[in-house]
Length: 374
Image 1 (cartoon, rainbow, N blue to C red):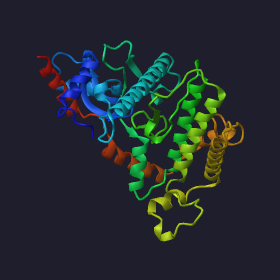
Image 2: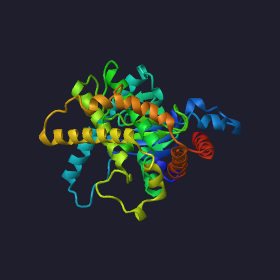
Image 3: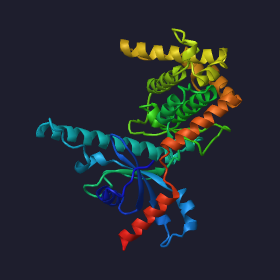
Image 4: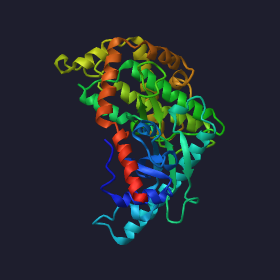
């Protein structure tokens, strides 16, 4: 469910002022450390009198507008009761500086991706427009407007899978996620200028069921480029890849009962755990072992304060490697059980965590805006 905005007219007015009245706010999609994300409509798309027949088309053009609200003193987190005035000023200044740096990096990255979207534009943020802090009116924040994704975060999908009889990630979906993330990184790393994708974790990956490349499987989209850098070296590229290996290893082990150090009692194994795990073979084991080895190498390098080294699992897992090519084929050969589980998890997650505005919410937002402008 999206967050109701009509109970907070102050936030709505600030959004309208920050976007210079170019957008009609529909709903708040979410909020992070650096900003607030809104579902909105470009005002230029709305005719003076929008008929009911236009609403479905307008809904399909709802975009996501990220306003870097922590750059505005009034939007910074309120002073804690135990915090002194000096401490609160220092904290607010620090947060504002972090947000400013984040907005500059994200805008630079998205402008680059708009200039050269590459072969996978639907798996990366698609920028509509950006307004840097220096371009914004005095006292107003930076903002970016992007094509909205009619899906949900990977972390939300994982939560639903846990509630769904501790369901492990189906094998085909796991291979597909791995292939799409590695292809996305390969493009970012090899483009000119090269680009990093930091903070790779489930909360920063969107599941998009509307743009499937492989029948029965969703697309996975990298979001949040606030920590990205341009002109990166090979070590940074390797660090990005190992971050994917780490997250994928966690997912590959999550709720699986077929490869545990201590055997799970039969009576504690759910039906879905049994159905997913009983179909694994040596290819799956080799894939998970490579992720485990890569994760171990990453942990040891950080603990020892030394750089990651290439070769080994990275050579086989990276785009074009043996295990990457194996996963690319395997994701298209999902059995009926995999497909049934994926369909059920997708439907449940969309029902529980789908935030994209309904036609009724779009209609109401337009009506409220028309009243506001009279």
